[in-house]
Amino acid sequence: MNRVVLKSVIGGLANVRNFNRYISTAVAVRPLESSEFLRRRSDSVLGAFQWRTRMMMSTGSTGETTPLAEKEQKKESSNDNRSVVVSSYWGIQRPKIKREDGTEWPWNCFKPWETYEADLSIDLSKHHVPKTFLDKTAFRTVKALRVLSDLYFQKRHGCHAMMLETVAAVPGMVGGMMLHLKSLRKFEHSGGWIKALLEEAENERMHLMTVVELVKPAWHERLLVLAVQGVFFNAFFVLYALSPKVAHRVVGYLEEEAVHSYTEYLKDIENGKIENVKAPAIAIDYWRLPKDATLHDVITVIRADEAHHRDVNHFASDIHFQGKELREAPAPLGYH
Image (cartoon, rainbow, N blue to C red):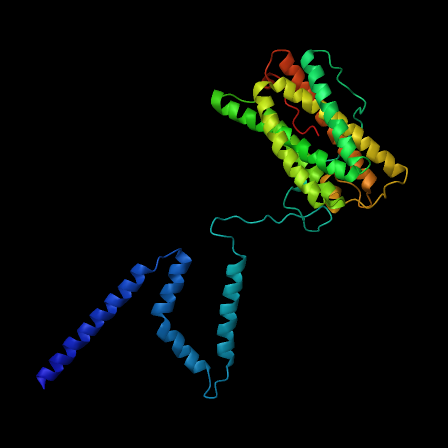
């Protein structure tokens, strides 16, 4: 009899030992990702018996769910819902931003504090008269490009504006990038010009995002954009590396042509050749336009932006022509 009892005790100890080894192995091979995960796994292992007991007590013999079971299910459902709205592991959440009228801000590409009212009082007739050989070269190059674009687009102002903005958004990005790398190499400040040029590039990109709401490019126009961007980016990168003063002068003349192009666009709208449709929602929020703004209002503010970019780039070129660096002059931050 004693032998039987002894064997039973030894067998029980062996089973507990095997059980502990099984549990420890399971814990070792399953990584613990967070404290929440550890708590849930601990509850599921240590409280399995209590959970099953509650479920057996809360379920009748017919298999129907009692109020206690429904309460448990609602609790689990609320926990699942709460886990959905919690921020990601990296803590990144979209901020809840509202307009002045209380409605939710719909745009992720820009925030309310990045919007502005365009300065329409700027002089649109300004022109830098080319005097030096480099200035004349820059001016004639831009004029040649203007002739080619006019031959291709003719009176299709919407498509012309789309192509213009895909090109105009490149110089600011290239210039800002080059100044950024220079600042890193020489351990010196840029005087705010990095931010100023990147602001210009972002502003030109927003022009494009507005134009594509009005004009849908065809497949061959998309191919043209691809080719022009590839050629222009690399050409302008090389030009800026060799001579920033010429690069900025070229951009200044490009912006002068942009002012002229948008002026022609406005004339055709005023003459009824182009329908004065409602302004896109993105334009109304970005430029703080009235709710009933039209295409005419949008083109007007875009033209004002281009005139400001014209002044910034001619100003930057003048700084270089005087033998100085951009960081020695105040950067026109927020000057659209």
